[in-house]
Length: 340
Image (cartoon, rainbow, N blue to C red):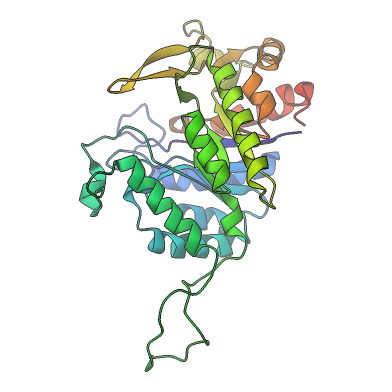
Protein backbone atom coordinates (compact mmCIF):
# COMPACT_ATOMS: atom_id res chain seq x y z
CA UNK A 1 0.00 0.00 0.00
CA UNK A 2 1.15 3.52 -0.73
CA UNK A 3 -0.02 6.96 0.19
CA UNK A 4 -0.82 8.86 -3.00
CA UNK A 5 -1.12 12.62 -3.12
CA UNK A 6 -0.67 15.45 -5.56
CA UNK A 7 2.07 18.07 -5.85
CA UNK A 8 1.25 21.47 -7.35
CA UNK A 9 3.79 24.12 -8.32
CA UNK A 10 0.99 26.68 -8.24
CA UNK A 11 1.71 28.40 -11.55
CA UNK A 12 -0.33 31.31 -12.81
CA UNK A 13 -0.14 33.30 -16.01
CA UNK A 14 -2.33 36.13 -17.37
CA UNK A 15 -2.62 34.35 -20.72
CA UNK A 16 -6.23 33.70 -21.85
CA UNK A 17 -5.27 30.02 -22.23
CA UNK A 18 -4.42 29.70 -18.53
CA UNK A 19 -6.97 28.48 -16.02
CA UNK A 20 -5.10 30.39 -13.31
CA UNK A 21 -4.54 33.97 -14.44
CA UNK A 22 -3.70 35.46 -11.05
CA UNK A 23 -2.27 34.56 -7.67
CA UNK A 24 -5.82 34.62 -6.29
CA UNK A 25 -6.94 32.07 -8.88
CA UNK A 26 -4.10 29.75 -7.95
CA UNK A 27 -4.65 30.01 -4.20
CA UNK A 28 -8.41 29.48 -4.34
CA UNK A 29 -8.14 26.64 -6.85
CA UNK A 30 -5.45 24.99 -4.72
CA UNK A 31 -7.92 24.87 -1.83
CA UNK A 32 -10.66 23.48 -4.08
CA UNK A 33 -8.33 20.82 -5.53
CA UNK A 34 -7.33 19.67 -2.04
CA UNK A 35 -11.01 19.32 -1.13
CA UNK A 36 -11.70 17.39 -4.35
CA UNK A 37 -8.65 15.15 -3.85
CA UNK A 38 -9.81 14.28 -0.34
CA UNK A 39 -13.25 13.36 -1.67
CA UNK A 40 -11.60 11.08 -4.25
CA UNK A 41 -9.64 9.27 -1.55
CA UNK A 42 -6.21 10.81 -2.16
CA UNK A 43 -3.89 10.96 0.82
CA UNK A 44 -2.02 14.23 0.38
CA UNK A 45 -2.10 17.79 -0.99
CA UNK A 46 1.42 19.19 -1.38
CA UNK A 47 2.66 22.50 -2.76
CA UNK A 48 5.96 23.81 -4.09
CA UNK A 49 7.32 27.13 -2.81
CA UNK A 50 9.17 29.52 -5.14
CA UNK A 51 10.03 33.17 -4.52
CA UNK A 52 10.06 36.02 -7.06
CA UNK A 53 7.95 33.91 -9.42
CA UNK A 54 4.34 33.60 -10.59
CA UNK A 55 3.97 30.58 -8.35
CA UNK A 56 2.98 29.79 -4.78
CA UNK A 57 5.34 31.44 -2.31
CA UNK A 58 4.19 31.94 1.29
CA UNK A 59 2.64 28.54 2.10
CA UNK A 60 1.15 28.80 5.56
CA UNK A 61 -2.01 30.83 4.81
CA UNK A 62 -2.80 28.28 2.08
CA UNK A 63 -2.06 25.27 4.31
CA UNK A 64 -4.21 26.69 7.09
CA UNK A 65 -7.10 27.39 4.70
CA UNK A 66 -6.94 23.83 3.36
CA UNK A 67 -6.80 22.53 6.91
CA UNK A 68 -10.00 24.39 7.72
CA UNK A 69 -11.80 23.02 4.63
CA UNK A 70 -10.71 19.35 4.88
CA UNK A 71 -10.72 16.63 7.52
CA UNK A 72 -8.39 13.75 6.62
CA UNK A 73 -5.97 14.60 3.82
CA UNK A 74 -2.31 15.27 4.64
CA UNK A 75 -1.28 18.84 3.83
CA UNK A 76 2.31 19.59 2.97
CA UNK A 77 5.05 21.34 1.06
CA UNK A 78 7.69 20.06 -1.31
CA UNK A 79 9.66 22.11 -0.56
CA UNK A 80 10.12 25.31 1.47
CA UNK A 81 13.48 26.92 0.67
CA UNK A 82 15.12 27.34 4.09
CA UNK A 83 17.60 29.93 2.81
CA UNK A 84 14.71 32.42 2.92
CA UNK A 85 13.21 31.47 6.28
CA UNK A 86 13.36 32.96 9.75
CA UNK A 87 13.11 29.60 11.53
CA UNK A 88 11.47 30.97 14.68
CA UNK A 89 8.74 32.88 12.86
CA UNK A 90 8.29 29.86 10.60
CA UNK A 91 7.79 27.64 13.66
CA UNK A 92 4.98 29.90 14.86
CA UNK A 93 3.27 29.86 11.44
CA UNK A 94 3.70 26.11 11.14
CA UNK A 95 2.35 25.50 14.63
CA UNK A 96 -0.74 27.57 13.93
CA UNK A 97 -1.46 25.88 10.59
CA UNK A 98 -0.92 22.43 12.10
CA UNK A 99 -3.35 23.13 14.94
CA UNK A 100 -5.97 24.40 12.49
CA UNK A 101 -5.63 21.18 10.47
CA UNK A 102 -5.75 18.92 13.52
CA UNK A 103 -2.16 17.75 13.16
CA UNK A 104 -2.09 16.94 9.43
CA UNK A 105 0.87 19.02 8.26
CA UNK A 106 3.73 17.22 6.51
CA UNK A 107 6.29 19.96 5.85
CA UNK A 108 8.98 19.42 3.25
CA UNK A 109 11.94 21.77 3.63
CA UNK A 110 15.28 21.97 1.84
CA UNK A 111 18.03 24.16 0.47
CA UNK A 112 15.83 24.95 -2.50
CA UNK A 113 16.48 25.00 -6.21
CA UNK A 114 17.96 27.51 -8.68
CA UNK A 115 16.15 30.81 -8.34
CA UNK A 116 14.43 33.45 -10.43
CA UNK A 117 16.84 36.09 -9.11
CA UNK A 118 20.47 36.12 -8.06
CA UNK A 119 20.87 35.19 -4.38
CA UNK A 120 17.28 36.11 -3.66
CA UNK A 121 17.59 35.20 0.02
CA UNK A 122 19.68 38.35 0.52
CA UNK A 123 16.59 40.47 -0.17
CA UNK A 124 14.93 38.63 2.72
CA UNK A 125 17.75 39.71 5.03
CA UNK A 126 19.81 36.51 5.04
CA UNK A 127 23.31 35.80 3.83
CA UNK A 128 25.77 33.01 4.59
CA UNK A 129 28.39 33.54 7.26
CA UNK A 130 31.94 34.12 6.09
CA UNK A 131 33.35 30.90 4.74
CA UNK A 132 29.92 29.26 4.55
CA UNK A 133 27.67 28.52 1.57
CA UNK A 134 23.98 29.13 1.05
CA UNK A 135 23.47 25.38 1.53
CA UNK A 136 25.18 25.63 4.92
CA UNK A 137 22.86 28.49 5.83
CA UNK A 138 19.79 26.49 4.80
CA UNK A 139 20.83 23.53 6.93
CA UNK A 140 21.53 25.85 9.87
CA UNK A 141 18.07 27.39 9.56
CA UNK A 142 16.62 23.89 9.37
CA UNK A 143 18.43 22.78 12.53
CA UNK A 144 17.13 25.79 14.46
CA UNK A 145 13.61 25.14 13.15
CA UNK A 146 13.74 21.49 14.22
CA UNK A 147 15.00 22.42 17.68
CA UNK A 148 12.30 24.98 18.46
CA UNK A 149 9.59 22.59 17.19
CA UNK A 150 10.41 20.34 20.15
CA UNK A 151 8.55 22.81 22.35
CA UNK A 152 11.25 23.29 24.97
CA UNK A 153 11.60 26.65 26.68
CA UNK A 154 14.66 28.69 25.74
CA UNK A 155 13.78 32.39 26.16
CA UNK A 156 14.32 34.30 29.41
CA UNK A 157 10.96 35.69 30.63
CA UNK A 158 10.47 39.34 31.47
CA UNK A 159 10.21 39.76 35.27
CA UNK A 160 7.44 42.32 34.66
CA UNK A 161 5.47 40.84 31.75
CA UNK A 162 2.30 42.27 30.29
CA UNK A 163 0.57 38.94 30.95
CA UNK A 164 1.38 36.20 33.49
CA UNK A 165 3.99 33.67 32.33
CA UNK A 166 4.18 29.96 33.08
CA UNK A 167 7.22 29.02 35.19
CA UNK A 168 10.65 28.58 33.62
CA UNK A 169 12.01 29.54 30.22
CA UNK A 170 9.47 30.32 27.53
CA UNK A 171 8.92 28.50 24.25
CA UNK A 172 7.41 29.70 21.00
CA UNK A 173 3.63 29.63 20.77
CA UNK A 174 1.47 28.20 19.42
CA UNK A 175 3.18 24.85 19.85
CA UNK A 176 1.78 21.84 18.01
CA UNK A 177 2.77 18.55 19.61
CA UNK A 178 4.12 16.01 17.14
CA UNK A 179 4.92 18.39 14.30
CA UNK A 180 8.65 17.86 14.81
CA UNK A 181 8.18 14.27 13.65
CA UNK A 182 6.41 15.35 10.46
CA UNK A 183 9.23 17.34 8.86
CA UNK A 184 10.73 16.13 5.56
CA UNK A 185 13.95 17.08 3.80
CA UNK A 186 14.04 17.45 0.03
CA UNK A 187 17.28 15.85 -1.09
CA UNK A 188 19.05 15.79 -4.45
CA UNK A 189 22.09 13.79 -3.31
CA UNK A 190 22.87 10.66 -1.33
CA UNK A 191 24.86 12.62 1.25
CA UNK A 192 22.04 15.04 2.08
CA UNK A 193 19.60 12.13 2.28
CA UNK A 194 21.88 10.50 4.86
CA UNK A 195 22.14 13.81 6.75
CA UNK A 196 18.32 14.07 6.78
CA UNK A 197 18.10 10.57 8.25
CA UNK A 198 20.55 11.46 11.00
CA UNK A 199 18.46 14.56 11.78
CA UNK A 200 15.28 12.50 12.05
CA UNK A 201 13.56 14.01 9.01
CA UNK A 202 11.58 12.08 6.44
CA UNK A 203 12.89 12.07 2.86
CA UNK A 204 11.42 13.78 -0.20
CA UNK A 205 13.07 12.91 -3.50
CA UNK A 206 11.72 14.62 -6.59
CA UNK A 207 12.04 14.11 -10.33
CA UNK A 208 15.52 15.61 -10.26
CA UNK A 209 18.69 14.32 -8.66
CA UNK A 210 22.36 15.13 -8.97
CA UNK A 211 23.93 12.53 -11.24
CA UNK A 212 26.25 10.56 -8.97
CA UNK A 213 26.72 7.31 -10.92
CA UNK A 214 25.43 7.76 -14.47
CA UNK A 215 22.77 5.11 -13.90
CA UNK A 216 19.10 5.60 -14.86
CA UNK A 217 17.28 8.09 -12.66
CA UNK A 218 14.99 5.62 -10.92
CA UNK A 219 17.95 3.37 -10.07
CA UNK A 220 19.96 6.25 -8.58
CA UNK A 221 16.91 7.39 -6.64
CA UNK A 222 16.30 3.87 -5.29
CA UNK A 223 19.92 3.71 -4.14
CA UNK A 224 19.47 7.09 -2.42
CA UNK A 225 16.39 5.81 -0.60
CA UNK A 226 18.17 2.66 0.57
CA UNK A 227 21.11 4.72 1.85
CA UNK A 228 18.65 6.96 3.70
CA UNK A 229 16.86 4.04 5.35
CA UNK A 230 20.14 2.48 6.45
CA UNK A 231 21.28 5.78 8.00
CA UNK A 232 17.93 6.11 9.77
CA UNK A 233 18.30 2.63 11.22
CA UNK A 234 21.80 3.43 12.46
CA UNK A 235 20.58 6.68 14.06
CA UNK A 236 18.07 4.75 16.17
CA UNK A 237 15.14 7.16 15.92
CA UNK A 238 11.93 6.13 17.66
CA UNK A 239 9.47 7.20 14.96
CA UNK A 240 9.28 5.41 11.62
CA UNK A 241 10.83 6.97 8.50
CA UNK A 242 8.80 7.91 5.44
CA UNK A 243 9.96 8.48 1.88
CA UNK A 244 8.13 10.23 -0.94
CA UNK A 245 8.97 10.42 -4.63
CA UNK A 246 7.23 12.64 -7.14
CA UNK A 247 6.33 11.71 -10.69
CA UNK A 248 4.49 13.11 -13.70
CA UNK A 249 2.01 10.33 -14.48
CA UNK A 250 -0.92 10.75 -16.87
CA UNK A 251 -3.36 8.03 -17.82
CA UNK A 252 -4.81 8.54 -21.30
CA UNK A 253 -8.47 7.66 -20.86
CA UNK A 254 -10.35 10.25 -22.94
CA UNK A 255 -9.92 12.65 -25.84
CA UNK A 256 -8.95 15.54 -23.57
CA UNK A 257 -6.11 13.51 -22.06
CA UNK A 258 -4.87 12.63 -25.54
CA UNK A 259 -5.09 16.24 -26.66
CA UNK A 260 -3.07 17.51 -23.71
CA UNK A 261 -0.55 14.70 -23.25
CA UNK A 262 -0.90 12.09 -25.98
CA UNK A 263 1.29 13.72 -28.60
CA UNK A 264 4.48 14.26 -26.64
CA UNK A 265 8.00 13.13 -27.42
CA UNK A 266 9.22 9.74 -26.19
CA UNK A 267 9.67 9.79 -22.43
CA UNK A 268 13.16 9.17 -21.13
CA UNK A 269 15.62 10.44 -18.54
CA UNK A 270 17.51 13.61 -19.40
CA UNK A 271 20.96 14.59 -18.19
CA UNK A 272 22.00 18.23 -17.96
CA UNK A 273 23.15 21.08 -15.75
CA UNK A 274 20.98 23.21 -13.46
CA UNK A 275 23.95 24.70 -11.60
CA UNK A 276 27.51 25.39 -12.70
CA UNK A 277 29.60 22.22 -12.74
CA UNK A 278 26.80 20.10 -11.25
CA UNK A 279 25.44 17.46 -13.59
CA UNK A 280 21.88 16.38 -12.83
CA UNK A 281 19.54 13.69 -14.06
CA UNK A 282 15.87 14.49 -14.68
CA UNK A 283 13.55 11.53 -14.36
CA UNK A 284 11.21 10.55 -17.15
CA UNK A 285 7.47 11.06 -17.01
CA UNK A 286 4.85 8.41 -17.63
CA UNK A 287 2.03 8.94 -20.13
CA UNK A 288 0.08 6.06 -21.64
CA UNK A 289 -3.13 4.07 -21.62
CA UNK A 290 -3.72 2.61 -18.14
CA UNK A 291 -2.60 -0.94 -19.01
CA UNK A 292 0.67 0.32 -20.46
CA UNK A 293 1.18 2.67 -17.50
CA UNK A 294 0.84 -0.22 -15.09
CA UNK A 295 3.56 -2.19 -16.86
CA UNK A 296 5.91 0.80 -17.09
CA UNK A 297 5.47 1.76 -13.44
CA UNK A 298 6.21 -1.77 -12.26
CA UNK A 299 9.79 -1.21 -13.46
CA UNK A 300 10.38 1.98 -11.47
CA UNK A 301 12.64 0.89 -8.60
CA UNK A 302 12.34 4.15 -6.65
CA UNK A 303 8.55 4.10 -6.57
CA UNK A 304 8.79 0.54 -5.27
CA UNK A 305 11.12 1.71 -2.47
CA UNK A 306 8.98 4.70 -1.43
CA UNK A 307 5.89 4.65 0.75
CA UNK A 308 4.42 7.89 -0.66
CA UNK A 309 3.91 8.95 -4.27
CA UNK A 310 3.23 12.58 -5.21
CA UNK A 311 1.61 13.13 -8.59
CA UNK A 312 2.72 16.41 -10.15
CA UNK A 313 -0.35 18.13 -11.57
CA UNK A 314 -0.76 20.77 -14.29
CA UNK A 315 -2.58 23.24 -12.06
CA UNK A 316 -3.20 25.75 -14.87
CA UNK A 317 -5.64 23.30 -16.45
CA UNK A 318 -8.14 23.83 -13.65
CA UNK A 319 -9.59 21.96 -10.70
CA UNK A 320 -11.95 19.65 -12.59
CA UNK A 321 -9.31 18.39 -15.00
CA UNK A 322 -6.72 17.88 -12.29
CA UNK A 323 -9.24 15.99 -10.16
CA UNK A 324 -9.79 13.76 -13.19
CA UNK A 325 -6.02 13.19 -13.52
CA UNK A 326 -5.79 12.15 -9.87
CA UNK A 327 -8.91 9.97 -10.03
CA UNK A 328 -7.61 8.12 -13.11
CA UNK A 329 -4.48 7.05 -11.25
CA UNK A 330 -6.31 6.16 -8.05
CA UNK A 331 -8.94 4.02 -9.78
CA UNK A 332 -7.36 2.70 -12.96
CA UNK A 333 -3.67 2.30 -12.13
CA UNK A 334 -2.99 2.12 -8.39
CA UNK A 335 -5.07 -0.99 -7.59
CA UNK A 336 -3.33 -3.11 -10.23
CA UNK A 337 0.05 -2.19 -8.74
CA UNK A 338 -0.99 -3.00 -5.17
CA UNK A 339 -0.91 0.66 -4.15
CA UNK A 340 -4.58 0.52 -3.15
